[in-house]
Each structure stands twice: as C-alpha cells, then as structure tokens.
Amino acid sequence: MKLAHISCAFGRHSVDQSAIRRVHGGHVGKCRTCATPLEESSPFRWTKLHIRDAGLGGRFLG
Image (cartoon, rainbow, N blue to C red; front, side, top):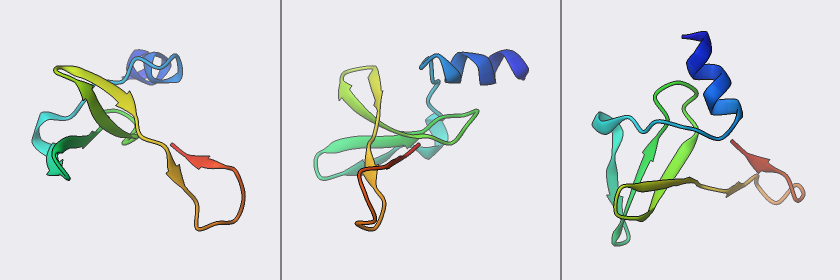
C-alpha cells in the first residue's frame, strides 16, 4: 500500500473502475489509493481534475 501512495505522489494515479461516472459527455472517476478526482482526457488516459475551492484563492484541491 505504501508503494501506491508513493506512485500517487509522482502523479501515477490508478482509476477505481467502480467509481467511474459519466458527466457532460466525459468520464470522471477517482484514484483507488488517494481518492484524487480524475477525468478521462482521451480513451484510457486519465488526468487529475482541478477543482477550485469556493473562490477563496488560486489553490486547487487534490
């Protein structure tokens, strides 16, 4: 499990297949290890989804 957290720190997230949802014509899911929101940018290619934090600044969650 620790190796999975280290790989997430380097940006190698693995998508949880049971948590994939279809939103506005695209697929959105989350990482199995750290629950970071992910979106499918191209078929079978997942990138981190940037979510703004209630207008409190330029910070991102995830």
